[in-house]
Image (cartoon, rainbow, N blue to C red; front, top):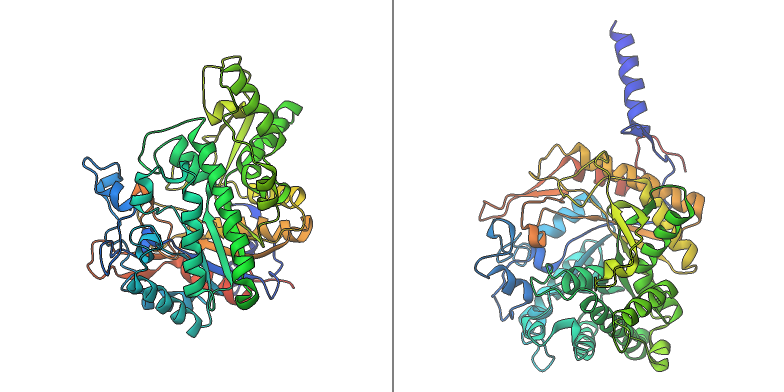
Length: 498
């Protein structure tokens, strides 16, 4: 009986090591030079919001509003206290055996006024110390220059909707390259332009400012792309020869699955992919917005009585400035949606969504997470990577965020492990069968942190953080131990082949 039970257990373990939630898992190892890492962002983890000369940023301002727009009136005033506990953060990263750490720089910690006339040396020293600690532990820093936390001084002047932002960003980027570039080889200019512009200025909630649908997101994106390009050109001309780094941008969005096999729904998928990913990649690769965006927005703008399109146009000089300005492409991917064309003759609706002519939704039967927007659909990861690889050949890519949320930060987080396994299996399939050129993967997030409007109500961390403890005690979850094994074996199941 004992021997037969042992055999049954062996078969069971073997079965579940190759399957997750009934899905067959890819048992090929990731390449030896493939990098695994973890990520955070400055406002979400640092705390120390008004210490050591740091200026106010837009999230300091938003979270201190009365009444607060944040769930449970949460703030990032202390957050995970990573400003003081960065060595503990690095020890956690080392414990998991990651190859790199993706983090962002707080603009207002380095330039308190938002302008480069005053550099806060204590802020600079903090990031130097973090980078030094990472390198001492053989962890590569991957640094995002802008991750949502604009200095409030610049937000008061219109933020990214004001084209004066372009040169202010280039000034900040120059300070970053000058102060940290000798020790940083991977730079990301912007995290999630779509979120910054569409959620921030179109819908209004990411900035907790007045919404400007159909106009604000296009102004923001036009300025962001020009700022990215000018920063890339500046790095290329002033720093690359000495520092030999790589500079990219991180984009984000859902995979949009056609709701049926009809040509109309396939067209809807392509349209929304172009309005989401092509919105930013197309100008960088080809010098201009996707044709379907230009056609739709120009047409609707004219019907609505605008004297010119709500989607700005690049000058010929700007086309040449922007085209070719990335060394790699970061992809933040979490979920998917179903789509169909939305036939409507109503032109009174001035909005990005109406411009797409597409409606999207997530079926109730898809597996849920702790976030209403994050439904689990692993095969969407492969489909998105395949689409990107097909449409933008020759660009190296890295997954800069992928993760799963719950609401209680439980330590026995088997659903998070299953999510990682199934998504990584599809990512490996994209590399193996679709020829996608992918060089790294980043788990979001290293630890539970401040999730913007949702405060601390959603937990994405590999490490649990006790936000009721003054010490912000960190405890590894089961997923951290699983991820540690992944980083060392390059394998998502127990028994891998080369």
